Length: 386
Image 1 (cartoon, rainbow, N blue to C red):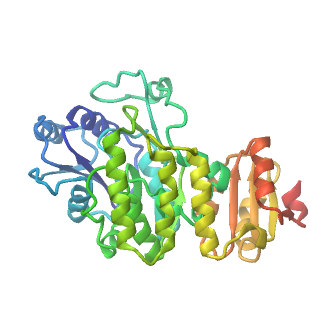
Image 2: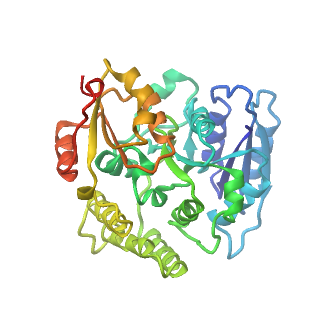
């Protein structure tokens, strides 16, 4: 499989240069060529010269495409990404922002999941650095990466997954969490649904709306913690961004007036409204997820979960037996190991049953999870309890 990294950029020349430098230091993806498609969305900061200069370097490890789009009233990230998707030649398209840095294994982590299952939308965490000077070539080696400490709590999805399931596809609202700063999909699926809706302009929800259409196409969703990226600066929600978000949510709900799951997103306004916010992100998202689950008839009190405890002593056996046992039972998995291969096995299964997965939950989180699943009972399998 060939990998195409699509990056829209608008007056982000210095940040883009650091991003491309980290892409040039990705771990080798054996047998899988990489191309990078930069879509310059009408920049006037010298981005074009910067990219052309980089493209002439003899040590460049990827094919580089550069496309300039004149700035118009219709310009925006959705339209720019669509241009990049159409220009891409890889089977797998990885979408990232111009201001992110990719640790050396990020692209390989995306590809690992796509090797396992052909119908996935793979997302990864996004953090950001604070009070750190990033040079024009980004962090150079593993030691430099280790010295960069990301700000805590940068990715709001981490709270949701810790509380509701680290198996993203088990969430009824997984499509909403398709954040285009770090997501990968097979190009054929993106083209089938028509890419982004470029009537979404400004900030927010053009990626969730794409995720919704990929969900309706039948794709599954996975969250690979090894496919992490880091923004080079903190993102602060402004009044203008909130107005854009509301306008795009109006557009989103008007586009699908007969689907109450789309309308249910309005509960999230109670955290994004900078004046009248009265609930936390996690409280809002719990309500959103509960509403969509109820619409789908997926109520926890109606599901009898088998609880599987995973520890270093039974990890290998659970990992091997889980695909088969998940076909015949609804599972609640507590994993104290945080094993990335177990996480991949769980997230890449094609199941019709519930499989809630919790990675290294605290004692408090564990108690809350069990309280939210009142019918959960220990597995009768001795292997999964030792």
